[in-house]
Amino acid sequence: MPISRNLLNLSFIVLCTVFIVSCGSVNQVEPLAVSNKTNEINSVLEDKELPEIEEVTVVAEVLEAEIKPSLPQSIAILPFKNSTSEQEASQTLRSTLYGHLASSNYRFSHIKDIDNRLAILSNEQELTPKNAELLTNLLDVDGLLFVEVLDYDKLYVGIYAQITFAVKITLVNVKGEAIWSKEFEEISREGGVSVNALGLLYNIAVTAWHLNDENLLAVADKLGRKIANEFPQPTKFQEVNYSYIETVLHDGIEQVLKYGDVLRVGIKGEANKLASVTIEGINQVFPLIEQQPGIYTTSISVDHSWNASERMLTGILRDSSGMTSKYISSVGLLSFDNEAPKPVTLLQDKVSPDRVTLTWQNSEPNLLYQVILIEGQIRRQLFETYQTEFVWEHTLKAFAPIKLSIVAIDKAGNQSEETLINKVVYPLASMYSATVIKKSRLPSTIDGQFILLKSEGPYIVDKKVTQVAGSGLYIEPGTEFQFTNAGNLHIQGSLFTFAGLPIQLQPLSKIITAPTFISLDSNEHVELNSVNIENAGIGIEVIKGSPAIVDCSITNSQYSAITVANMAQVHIRNCFLSGSNTSGLIITDQARVNIEGSQFTENFPFHIQSSSIYQVEASDNNWLPAASPMSVLGKVRY
Image 1: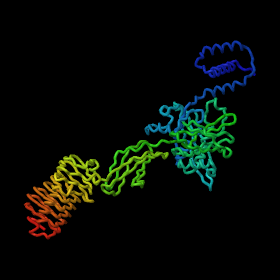
Image 2 (image 1 turned 135 degrees about the horizontal axis):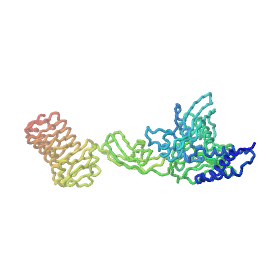
Image 3 (image 1 turned 30 degrees about the vertical axis):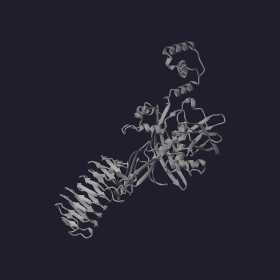
Image 4 (image 1 turned 90 degrees about the vertical axis):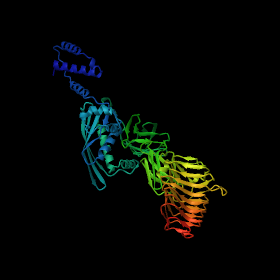
């Protein structure tokens, strides 16, 4: 049948348009040129009959295909919308879908990078096509893949499991316009994952992902492959046939590997191919061995030079012609760490007789800290924590040394150099800010907070040593003092002594004339506990204040063991006063003294001699010789 001129003209215009578009110059063609060409054809074909041109329909179909909405170049797979009760299905399919699509002809952003960027969005900013412009700018892509889980159902019959997995996939552009959309369903009937090299890797993936069923990973893999097979591709890539890869697995899931570790990998795909894997950032190709048709595995020893975080593992199959296919493993990224953490930097180290408190600075995330107690050659782990604080409630001996060690261990097991803590267990918190006096000869003035330790003695008191008001002096049990004939310890501040091994005060040599050893001239806290004073002129002189003298032994004083004057108020308990050559205890002025549980022996001529206007309370004590008006003078009740 003769073709009409109008139809012929239309065909010519279509052909011209296709030619112009294919040359990439459609924007340069002016409408006038097309019009002139049409007029020229009309004049040539006037009154001519031509055969029917059947290809016109084909040309129209090609034109229709070429003017469909352009495909994006980069795509982000957004978190799935899932209204089913099986939330783990979404994450599993999302990861496997990424593995199947990431090696296609698009640039796919990694899921972890997507989620990190999406975290800054507010709850009001929904993941929907209407927010496509916002999302594409945030994710630095020009395409978004929305996935809705329509159905997920599991049915178990004996050892077999049937899983139905249905989803709707929608690809949109930056304007939120749907470029492609389709529903997919996969019904998998599995009898459990096979027990072979790849099946073992499947089991490892299932365990690391905390999945309830290994068949979920298998059916998600199949569904992801089905979606990838039908996913729209640019025209020039659609005719290429690559070797088929079903999945790529590894056993480094949720681990940080280091030197000495072995990474096992496997590929399941088309048989009789050359298989290998690459690790992002590591310039090396690792060949795999085909263990059985389509099953390729290998073991990779981690090199000491590998230091990388969250890197992709890509499986590769190559055929005899050199054509390759790639598949990014969807079971997780790989991390390697062969660098030890930095040593722990302490912020606080407090030690008391019932508690040890340590705090430190976190040098990097996810570090495990171990606190170790060192006792000679024995090392005992006390604590293990991911926190930056350690509190150990334990009874410790006062003034005993304690040695601790802290090490940091990263996820790969690399261990930092140890940080050592050498402390002395002080009975009072205020002592940790005090300074230990290390000079054996005490200075003439003690101004501030100071500690006298047994290990630094004996301390020589060869002059009047004045501890000024407002200062604090702490003396460890067992500390020794030696006095010359000019020596005197004059206390005007706070004095702290403690029960335990007696503090020893004695002359530097037996031929030295004995002075007054201690003068208590303070209204602050003063306690003499467990002090032995031998061969002093006067052991303790109380000028003012309200000191406590407890569990002390004062013997062989040239004059008196204790003198109390002015308005001082003294409590003497469980003390031993013996061998004084004038009086064991002399009390004058308006001083008040209370004595209990103490022993007075062999003091001549008196045990107590009091001229105070107040009565001395001295009942419940032991006397040798017995207390009597001859040995106890003044207002004393005994």
